[in-house]
Length: 420
Image (cartoon, rainbow, N blue to C red; front, side, top):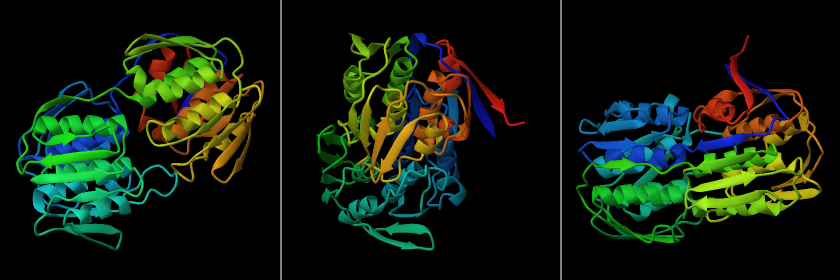
């Protein structure tokens, strides 16, 4: 297993361009299965999760051809109603997104219960309820989800929670159903919007994306197309916090300013200089110790749960006491114990964490327990005095492409090493 070795307390300086979005790439790759004609997808990040999704597509009979770096053509003509392998599905929750396309193509699907990061219960019942509203019968047995329908139909779907995955899965199935399907209390995340744009290019008519009510007018036969995935707003937010926690000055390029507003607003609250250069570029600079603030994670457009751990690393160094409330996942404070190994003072009380800021962190051996926790430990290591070793880099590789190389380009002293 690899690990990162970081020598901290060095301000980051320079410019960085954000790569393609993991959370947009995964559903769009799954959606290429909705048609028998090929699609070419550009700006796909080279991540472990993306590689897993490609293997899932291939296990179902699709042929995936690398066109260029970050570009793939998916040929789904020979797709078969097979059961994707458990060893792939268990690695990544987003692999369950092939269920909607399989139901659309074959009227049936059998998919193992998914896995992924250990950040709390993320039940798939919202997906299944959505499918049921469109005529799919579902059952669960021996760790598998089975769905079948003699004839799917349009309808009205209400989601009890604005789940991103459930919105995407239902939207993909509805894209192939003639008639009008309404998804109420839909997720509003930009990645859902990106998927909707792709489905629209394939021939579906979708309105209301970005709001809590999405209307899908499907077509029985969709066509493949060429599409460029949006850039990753969570990677962008991570680099913004990296600049702040190291008291550096970094221009982050490639993500729409509006998509980062909740993160940038919180950075300004703690004393970070944030300057909008243009619609897709922002300057982040920090000279003093940050102020304490309170954060509550919420579905978009609220503060993203995927930025909670990284921001906690920054608040560990704040002047004062901060409170972070996690409303999206109930077990997303696994990084607290590792930050405490570096000198942080954090007390977890249910779904809230009280962060008592300290003047400095000290390098230590720590372990990433999930993707964003790993990113938080890297950020803490960049700011800490001495050397930090972050184990469990495989978690980080699931969502950040060549993170150590990008940070090193900004002046960080970080290297990837293999366990001896």
